[in-house]
Length: 218
Length: 204
Image (cartoon, rainbow over all chains, first blue to last red; front, side):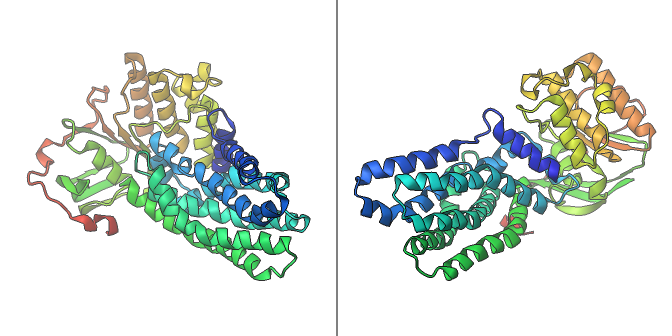
């Protein structure tokens, strides 16, 4: 399993692996929004939590179809399905690799990009914490969506449509944590719910995704 | 030991082969022959556990199977060694040197898989079989794009595998030079009446 994780990470960082695509998108969005909205600090501060979370979510979405599509095209997925590691573990490992390549870097650069959006200082730790807790859910839900669309050519559109509604709770609670954090309000409830979504997704979706892959491989 | 009893296999809800009853003992190779579309690949995928049989049953432990499909499952940005050692680690980490030597890949270890020729890629894909350490090989057109020397090399590898008590089911159009192998012509088993198993297939 470690071998699979290392292989996926190595592939992501090699040329054509797609590392940086999500980061670049997140960066561009955070730079362009202030230019579009205008320089007024109070407006930016008010929309910053939402924009940062929407940006992180869309950046995650960009690379989802690669999770299984590439392995399906070159035949590795068939071979992994007959390999000694269970398909549920393959899904979980690939979601983890996706998170390390997109979710984690997004979390790390978010405070830097929050400066462009004039996020109030009190919001910074909560921004990092909410992304740290919430982005794993994005990767796992995304892996499930990718598993559902694995046999389809150019399944990216369908994948986005399937996954976006499932992303909504994460977005709502994630944005809410940052907003409340920035305004020094109590935020234990949305934070707990955000963590619960990630944990629930991690516990359940690998099984659903593995079943979807088995059906798609037939 | 592989035994099929009245096995029928379906592709996309349409039964392509039915009434397959046979058994293969360890040390024996079964060569599948039949025109394109006769269900060779579907049969192999069924035996590999990638799809359920439409009817009947077969007796084969899923953890004894090494499947080699049309696609080799290679990552073009990884080197030959990286590709092969990945599969070796997945199967519990046997050394890859033996497999590299057996398929004449020692000169190419540092080359990226994307830079290999079609035949070299195929050889790398077949080297994976040796690192799996599994007794039953299911091979789908293993000799495609191999030259004559490599086909002979591969036949030797299959023969060595059989001599160690392994078992192989090979779908192929070319003569591998395995006179002891049992040849099964799939033509008589083709399902005459095209039958749809309906859309409940996805929920079976």
